[in-house]
Image (tube, rainbow over all chains, first blue to last red; front, side, top):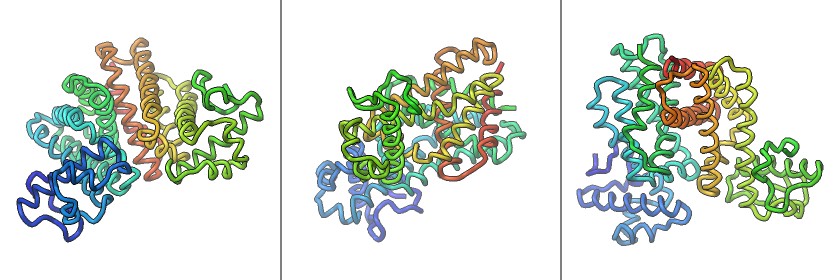
Length: 212
Length: 212
C-alpha cells in the first residue's frame, strides 16, 4: 500500500504503467489526488482543468502525465481513492465495537464526521454516476458487500436473529448503506448535526429490528 | 391540477407566465415533459437539445418557448414533475395499508415498480444535484417530510413506540428514504428483483425496530 494512498494494492491508483516507484513519487501522487479532490469537488468535473489541479498541487504540468493519461483517468483514480478513504476512515471504529449493532453505530458516526470534514466526497462520488459509471457502481457494490459481510458475521455470532436469511441481510446491507448516505447528506453536508445523536437514533431501531 | 401533470398547483411546471390555459395546452406540455424525460434520461442534460426534445414530442420548436424560457427551465420543471410522479405513484399504496409498517412496505414496493419502469428517474434526479441543486434538495426534503409525517402519525395511532421522539422519527425518515433510494438503484435499476420480496425483508426489520 502506498503512503497514505489508501489503496488496497489490487486496484492501481495511477494510470496503467504509471504507478509511482519511490516514496517521493507517492507523495507527489497524493498531492495531485488531494488537489483534484478540492478542485473537482468545488468546480465539478467539466469545469476543472489539469492545469488548475497541478497549480493547486504545486507540481509542474508535465508531472501530471507521469501519473495519469487524462483528466478522466485522474477522476477514476480519485473515485477509487475517495472510496478507499471512506473505508479506511470507518475501519478503526468497527474494531472498537462490542457487537454488530455497536459497530454499525460507530461506523455511521465515523462516516458522518468524515462527510462533514470532506463534503466534496458527495459531489465527487455522485458525479461519478455520469463521468465514471463503473467506478460509481463499484464504490457502492464494494461498500454494500462489506456491510453485508458484517451483518452475516453478526448473525453467526448470534447477535442477529437467525431467521434473517443471507439474502435478507444482503437487502438490508443496501438499505443500511442508503440510510447512511442520506443521513450524511442531510446531517453532515447540508447541516452540521451531532453525529453521535444521529447515529444513536438509527442504531436503536437497527438493534431492535435485527436483534434476537 | 393540470391533466396528468401531477403538480400540486402550488409549484408551477411551465415557466412563469407560461402555464397552459387550455386542456390542449396541458396535453402539449405533458408531451414535452415526457419527451424531455426520455431524451435527458438517455443522453444526459448537456447532450440533450431543445430540438431533440421537440422532435421526440412531435411539436414545433416554437411551441417549446410557449411553455419554457430555456433548457434549464425545462429541466427544473422536469425534476418537479418526476418528484410529483413518484409521490402520486406511491400514494394509492399508502391508502390500502393496515398500519404504518404495512404502508411503508407497500410504498417501497410501489416505488420499486416505478423505478423499474422509469429507470431514467434516477439519472434525472441525480443529475439535478449538478444542474438544479435547489430542485434536487427540494425533492428529497419534501419526500423526507412526507415520510416523517407518516411515522409521526403512526406513533400517534400507537403503532410506533412512544419512546421515539419527534426528532428521532425525522432522522429515521431520512434513513428510510435513503434505504428506499438505494434499494431502487440496486434492485430496480441495476437488476430486476421481485419488489415484494425486497420490500418484505426491510419491512420486517422496520416493524421490529420501531414497533411497540
